[in-house]
Length: 200
Image: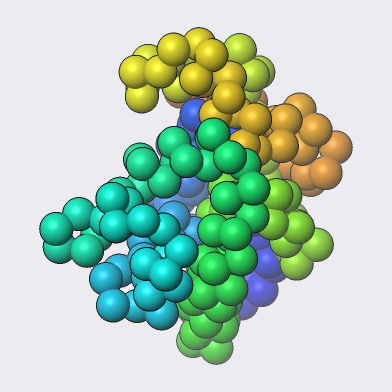
């Protein structure tokens, strides 16, 4: 049974999801914080109720679904909103993932389990894990990818990056760093090296 607590993190537009898929292809079970976050804001849930009490009706569509893009724009304008959002969502997200982890360990499947947590360091959760894997690209690449992916201006992309800790500051806090700034073969070789380490 592999009971190492392993976290995968990165920065926005670092390609963390690509790396997560590479680990999944090798047999890892990925516990995705973004999936848990979407569950947390399902209409009718406790977190959703608290969001409805906080946010204006314009942040929800006719079916009551949260407009995540509008919320992200609000956070970019007022970073203090992120503190309030995290206080609502993070307890649910971590409890959900912890429950999934516990079931997998108790089932003794011997699978490698990886917690995929974009805001690992921002949520001060890194000390819960034995190994932290950071997907890293230089900030300039993050900005370029954000502009292309989300149709942002450079100023908007730079402001979006400010929501998270600088990606370079996460390097010394991580046990494994995967450079995702080149091609997929380059990334895949590093994932294999990391896999050999965490699956042993």
